[in-house]
Length: 310
Image (cartoon, rainbow, N blue to C red):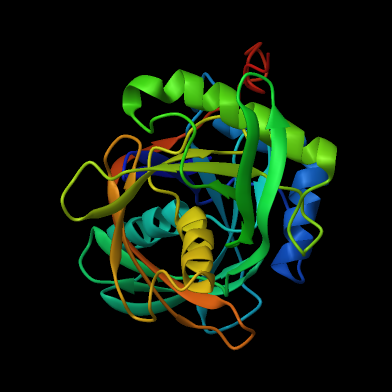
């Protein structure tokens, strides 16, 4: 299996160029469902240790339905097939540039939730224009042992998010373990309560916000992903959900730009324009760097060829 690894703001992306399962044809959403339901061992084997790592997201290249798209892509982590991935799309664009498949300028990429656009500014800097994002519920409260009542908004940005501002815990690198424990508990409480987005999707990501640590930053976030790992980047789809909430509250104007910091200090530049259905069309600019190009082997005699699943 031929793969190229990159990172976007510290969050790794593994682009799978060949060797994936046959998912058939038709809409990418259908092919993503087949990957999730019929090829569980495959996608976990690529991303779990010892081949992968907990923070990694994989990008499986597939043939797009839309002929104007340079590729189709299905994203997944070790626990879930994702609708969209912002850092992964920035990493994918940088990888396609590295391969010579695209150059500078605008390109379309098809995902299971729709077509997104990438503007390649230089070989490492990419702006993603995401699908329309929206807040679906405001001020949803849940009870969490040890922290009492926590309130946040539910928003869709290509995945389903619960956004808490301000965080009940300082959003600092020294608090990553505690932030992980609490956000996992928050998500479990949301599931028990049946909270999700208007697509019928349960909350799969939780974001806590704290003050920025730089002069230009708007805020600093901690993002819990479906596999219980934290996002090293500021999370592109999470930033899309954030923009929808800020716009709905009148806290950010159309076309105004902010800088979102991650818990490790990497940044995205964010802005939006109004969407046709009452939401926002987010723009996320970040930097990605190719790290490795390799061939993965799956030897029959390897006891951990399907990954280490504990």
